[in-house]
Length: 177
Image (tube, rainbow, N blue to C red; front, side, top):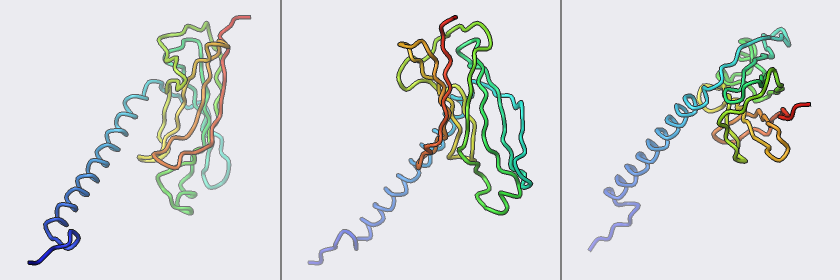
């Protein structure tokens, strides 16, 4: 009687390969759907480029964008981020990705009217912009500090893994002087 060890059993190996391939396909489909969902869900606020600062001869720039909070009338945020130029991309590789560096400032620009905002401690994404083809984005979240009657805006880089600790914060008090 011949006993086959599961590793040497051709039928078992084919089944294991099929399960692994199925798992990889599922992972790819999940990531793709997540990317599509992120794009569709966070396309709420539309930013307008209002400035571009040249920082060196390689074509690297600091981009300044403005967007109005889609659920809070009277609040405008300005976000800055670094955009790599063509020469920098050619020299350093990593063609399809920009750094996570960013800054934010949000101000009251009119009478504030709160819409139906998320009041959880996780807050709500109000703006997103891709920083690479698939895996990386610049996110702006709004968190409502009800105790202090303040809107807190946090800008950060978001990645599938190896998230960035680079972030900035801006607050808008809701009380009238």
